[in-house]
Length: 160
Image (cartoon, rainbow, N blue to C red; front, side, top):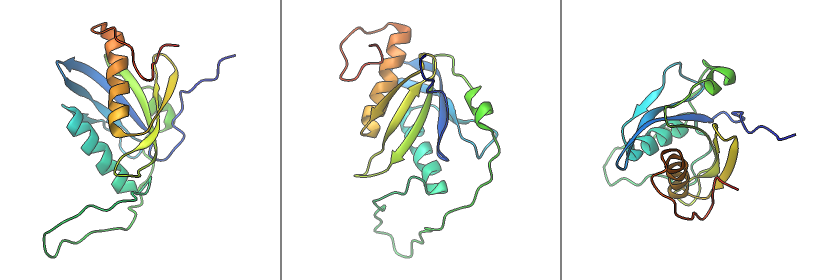
């Protein structure tokens, strides 16, 4: 019997719903347990910055490198903001994108990047990533598989 990878499992677990891919512009929204609403994004940049802000707000995983600033009197808050769980894991897992749905579990934020695993919900397959860039490439690879735009070999493949 195949073991299901469809679970959240961490306080910072995110469900990423991709609705459209226009050229290289990915559009959609992501959900986490501390909000009842999805957070929209219209580009990969917005997605990455939105996720980074979320991880900073829950202080998990802990960021091992600090942002640098050359501005005077910039106050930084290192206190963890207590948040209450609004959306259950079942509600999170019920969200789906038009092109693809992914569960992102960032386990570490080291070396100015993220390390963790990503599950493609439609295929119930999980891959590990070592950087933000690798995670983005995995999402793009899955979306390419769905839209059948490319057929080139990948370093890590969703297909076995």
